[in-house]
Image 1 (cartoon, helix red, strand yellow):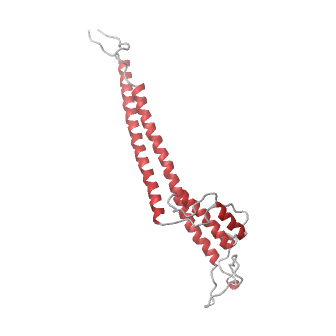
Image 2 (cartoon, one colour):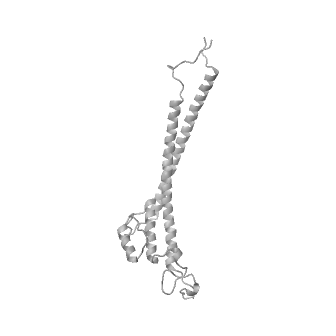
Image 3 (cartoon, rainbow, N blue to C red):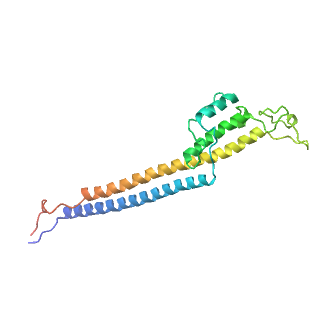
Length: 216
C-alpha cells in the first residue's frame, strides 16, 4: 500500500513551503538592509564629529545662559530669547553643540547691530555710524576714492549667517544619522521577526500530527 498526498494537500504543502522560503528570504534581505543602514548611520555621525573637530571651534566664555542674558541686557536687546544651552569653553565636536554655538553667534551679531537683522540694514554705512545704514549711495559715507563704504554691521550678518548655516547643517546631519540608525534597527528587528514567524507559523506538520489520507 502506498501513501500519497491528494492534489489539494500537495498544493497546500507546496504553498506552505514557498511561503516559508519567501519569509526566510525576505527576512534575510531586511536584516541585510538593516545592517547596511546602521553602518551608514554610524559612519555619517563619525564624519560630522571629525569635520567639526577639525575646525577647532571652542565656545567663548560668555556662551552660557547667565552671562549671555547679562550681555543682552547691557546691549539693550529686547524680544530675543537667550539660548538655554551651555558651550562656554567647550570644544564643538557634535551637531548639538554646533547648533548651540550658532544660537550664541546670532546673539553676538544682534549685539553688534543694535538688535537689527540683515534685512533691516542698508548696504552702505552712514556718517553717523548707525548700524541701520542706507541703500542710497548718495547718503552713504565715502572712502578716500569717493566710493560708498559698505555697512560693516550688515557684512557681519552675512558672515554670521554663512557660519551658523554650516553649523546647523551639521546638527541636521547628526539628527538624520540618528534617524537612520533607528530605521536600521527597526529593519533588523523586522527581518528577525519575519524569519521567526516563517519558521514557527509555516513549518510542515509534525510527525505526531494527523497523517494524510492514504490511497491504495
